[in-house]
Amino acid sequence: FPCIMLATISRSIPGTGICAPRRKTALQWAAAAGLALCIWVVLQILHAQCTMGLQSTASLRLGQLKHRLPLALALLGCILTSAFLPRPLEWLLGNRLMRWLSGLTFNFYIWHQFLAVQYVRNWFPNTLHSDPGLQWAFTVLCYASTLVLAAALTAVTDGFARWGKSFCSKRTRKQSAL
Image (cartoon, rainbow, N blue to C red; front, side):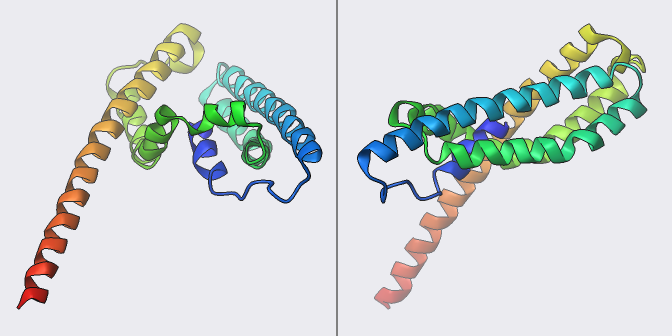
């Protein structure tokens, strides 16, 4: 979901409207190359983290601590370069699906760790970190179930927010009529 956060944040950074058209085009394609490089770095870091976790839980935690700063810097690079993408690539981060997913990120963030801990405690044996197949199944289960839960909770909270807004606006109109 870093890509979804990237899509959300990149829409709020001002564009490059002050550049001349030729320089703007060059900047946009340089940004696209920079984004591709940053995504490649992120994938390499994530792969390194995953393989470190196969030895033990302690090595997984150490790997996460070791890679935290480089991962944050690579994601920052993704965010900054995405603000200057050419129009066709900009659509990839600004389409309806990405906007919908960006609305789920907070609930996803809140619930993913809780569900992962519950799955490890209740369904998966202690050998989760030594079996790549089991680790893959665990990861897919965590992401899929968290996505469904986040979508449901976002729909419920958005429904309450819309109801509250309409209730308050009706109440304000009644009070102003008096």
